[in-house]
Length: 104
Image (cartoon, rainbow, N blue to C red; front, top):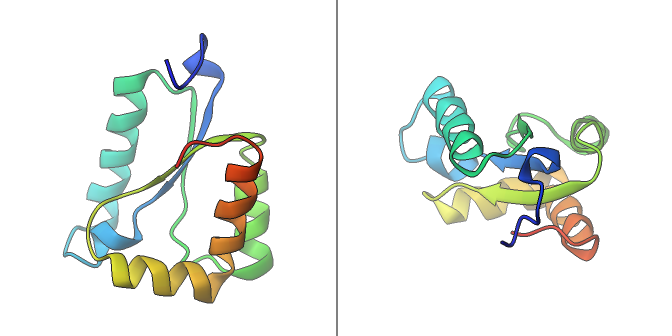
């Protein structure tokens, strides 16, 4: 219900940083994000790790999703997640998405 009547029209920014810092490979993290999207019928998913995509490049990658309806930060090392979000400028992008109505 939180995704609205048409989850296939929702875009999700999947953040695998914390999961990868717990030992998961990038490929496994991508599969995890894709599985979540399939499970909920989400139409558009982009896996963007703010540890490797920063600043203007991160802003551009998130903007390519259009209206972000979901920001999904995977479980794992939350210290690493918070550090990388702050370092990359991703924390501001998460706040902007939430101000625009995204679920976190």
